[in-house]
Amino acid sequence: MIKIVIITVLIFGGDWSFSQTGTIIENKVKLFSLEQEKDTIDFVVIDTILNQKKPIFLWCQGSLPLPLFCEVEGYGYFFIGGGLSNIDYKKIVKDFHLVVISMPKIPVLAKQENLNSSFHYIPNSERPNEFLPEYVEADYLDNYVNRANAVLSFLKKQKWVSAEKLVVAGHSQGTKIAAKIAIHDKRVSHLGLFAANPFGRIDQFVRQARLDAQLGKITWEKADSLMNDLYASYKELDDIEFQKEVPSWKAAKTFSETFYDDWLKLNIPIYLTYGTEDVGAALCDLMPLFFIEKGKTNLTLKRQIGLEHNFFEVDEDGKTNYDKAHWYEVMEEFISWIK
Image (cartoon, rainbow, N blue to C red; front, side, top):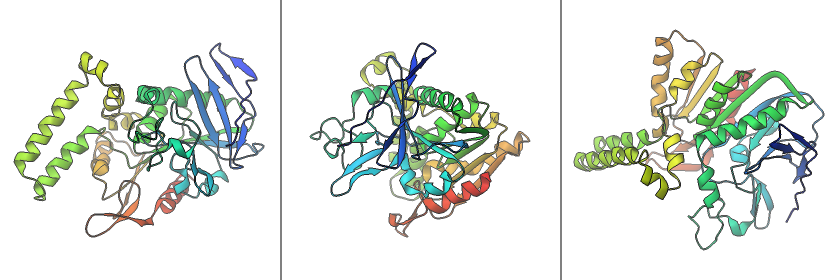
């Protein structure tokens, strides 16, 4: 296993320390760590030599505890990078310092024995669906935003970082983090939202129940019951006793709030793209109406016809075709839009 050595060389503000030059990992990225009393924020810059001054492109990954590097039998450590392995990130690196932050409490490099079949980090291989308790506790919106702000504050001070632009983009859950970052950091020049749900998270399950009833997959009585259960579950998130018993309540609560109001507060260019077969992102179709209502012209909407949440094609029977991926094209359109 690769041994990672992070040397603390500077302390600032009393709470944070960082490795100034970074550590090269797998000859692909430079790893940096920001250390706080109760947290260590690991992030990587997708490069090995940082001697060229370029703006930052911060990628906010989606949900679940995916390590940045996963050990694969017969291969070694495969760079997942919060989904960056799905795109031609080398094209982005030509013009930007591409940055992705490790999930909270999850190691940057994960051994095969600590990965389930979906490459999620698990502390016990005998319990493949049980996540690290510390991760579950740290998995909430404000924590991701605060960690990203700390990383951007560090990067701002580096000689190899240009202030010309600051692109922040995210996929799925990452769109919510990216939007909050843009609200708080006025240096953000472009915002990219991939497969976003402007109304949060729980609403899509309500809409799915309605759609299933309309399509005859379930009865309206069943749909009614499902929707009422969802309302009750959402209400429980504010119950103090429930919060004590269910560690994951913070994620469910904070990522289920409405987000399109954040988008409307921004005056920077916003690029919103989603697959037409993605139920969670279906209400993106309404967003131009809200922007028109406010007299705002900073939204670019791009539908990806026939694609699902992760930009794979969908067969006639509604099943995802994993042989037909389109992340490359989706990201290239975004990069062209920035330029």
